[in-house]
Image (cartoon, rainbow, N blue to C red; front, side, top):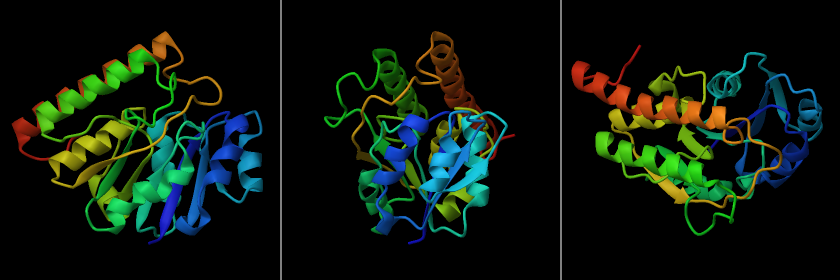
Length: 235
């Protein structure tokens, strides 16, 4: 498989070297770091370590992922990974296995199992993820436990989902549209550790509340629109 790894970054100079060093080269075809106005040397470090660095001055996690996807060179599978070293890139083979074996179209790395290091996820983030996962099970019938950022997706499926969200709602949009489209979404347990540096979202009250409201309302809104229109395509 041709595997493109996309890593959105903003001021991750302390972590990005560890992320790139831990990626198993025999499982990756290309590594794309999509940088958003870092001023701490993140893009220079990434380029020096062999990653393709793409500048995306417009803020937004989803926008960075979409920019990376547009840059990827004909992959079979696209992997998304945060640049803070909270997930372990060395576990990429675990994430790819269900797709390689033909059992999944999308794999999600679940952080809520025994591999999660103590204190890696604050209580409010654990609660929010469990609540969102419960709503997804209720409205969409998809059995997941977490909305983790470490995930892999068949490139043809990803393009077919026509994702549009440019904010932190982008990972949720992927799950919702995949569920509505009947694609196979499989969770695999991954390790999770305290991130290097401060989170731009869960590290602040404003970011946490804003992300939670946006994600939960998106889950409900997509469900009602689907029931009303009978289609997985939304404006």
